[in-house]
Amino acid sequence: IFEIVCAFLHASNLTFEKVGAVECKLQALNNHLDYVTDLLGISRDGLNDALCYYEITVGGKKETHKRVLSMEQCQKGTEALIKAAYGALFQYLVKRINASIAGDGVGAPRSRTRGSKEASIGILDIFGFESFEVNSFEQLCINYCNEALQQQFNRFVLRNEQEEYDREGITWTFIDFPENQDVLDLIDLKQTGIINILHDKCRTPGGNDHTFALAMYETCSGHGRFVADPRQVGEKLFAIQHYAGVVEYTVDGFIEKTRDELPKKCSDLLLSSSNGLVKKIAEILQPDDSPTTKGRRTPRGRASSRPTLGVQFSSQLQNLRQKIDETSPHYIRCLKPNGLLVPDHFDAALIADQLACAGVIEAVRVSRLGYPQRFSHNQFITRYRILGRRLKKKKNAKNYNPTKALVHSIAHRLLKDGDPKDDVGIQVGKSKVFLRREAYDKLEVMRRGRISTAAISIQKTVRAFLCRQQFDRMMRSSITIQSFIRRVLATKLVSEIRRRHNSTIIQRTFRKFSARRYLLSAVFMTRWCQTRYRGSLGRRRYNELNRQRKALCIQRHYRGHVASKYLKKCLGAALAIQCAWRTHVARMS
Image (cartoon, rainbow, N blue to C red; front, top):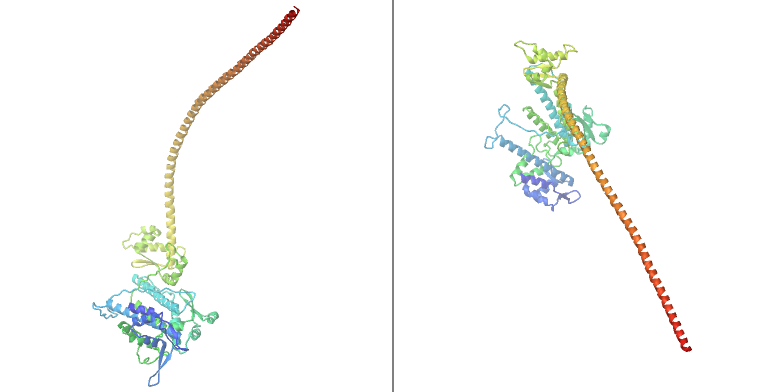
């Protein structure tokens, strides 16, 4: 199986090269070619002949003529081979798995009849409704499947409603629910449906997207769900009003996508494979050899009995719906909270769009047309007994039904302002109570009102109790706080008095110390100044006396010098006179 899948993957990378003006062949230098031939067990020449040529059988003698294919046709033939072989492999795996799980222990499948007691559980993963900027054949098939399954879901919901109403024994009248059969007829009705028109154009020589669009506009233009204005006709577009909204499709590529034409030589080539599994896949690809289709071939050598993709899809969808009708389905809707793939982020617009595309909103609307709300008797009494408690207490009969009594009392309250003959929308079944949407809304409003009134009374009482408790706590707390504050203030006052007394003592001592220090400083300075002054006066007196003494000494010395000098002078003069006199005397003598 993995070899075949790998071969298909390599086959998607095959390339072609031109030989002449039109003729082409497989590119021999492509590395993927060897993988394809080895894994599928076929020859390179056989693969080239099957993809690049086709044969035409004419005349009663069945003469065969070989014709060449263009490069585009070869590429499309390769794609058709890959898709068809992959689909056949899938069918083979499904049959093999079903035969294994339904076997009797040795691999042989057991026969199943519709009346057999064998049970089975299946899981169907349904693709969601699609609407893109450009919608093609794939989106049409997907939305067609969603339309069919949505119709089946609506009918399933209605059938379950009908069965439950009958089982509970309540009055039930048929309700009209949204029907989308006209959309299904627009898509798959014989001769006039889009799929059948597409099938006819695929089987018509020279059919293309343009002829298909013209035929579709001409056939479906009067349908109420088909939309094609002049702009859309000019651009080869059309729109269909689906249950989830209007979707616009483009016709381009419809013919090529729905043909699914597999070249006959490709299936014959796979039959000649040396791989046994490839041969089994080729047998699945072989067309039916019915008398009406045996020997008929399209101009390119493709089997005309092979239905187009649209017809195959419609047939498979019908089989699927039949299988679902024979089972008891349970639906699970999966929603993506956001497109960013991050946690804790809820995109309301995206969720609403998914609910609409998944048909949940439509299903809810169908369910709300009947009795969408239902409760068991115990649940109903538990939920709504506050609306009829007083009336229920008056009943004491043995056959007293509290649920009916409660419904009766509630009905009186609902019909207080209306006609007593009107239907209140509440019915009591054997085990459940059914409510219409209007009645449920009214009951919920009444219940919320009663709960709101009771809640207000409870809140009033509780708030009063809490306020009294809070007031008592506040009083006790205030007294405690006041006592504490007064104690603190008294302590602060005593501390302040002590501080002032201590500060007075400190100030007195400091002032005494300052005055004493100032006095001592003044006395010291006075004494120092007196000492300095007295010393200055003494020194001045001493200096004066010393000066006088020195002056007297100088005068004494000077006078002594002067007297000594005069004395010496006198002595000299006296001596001179004596000498002169003696000389004179001597002379005289």
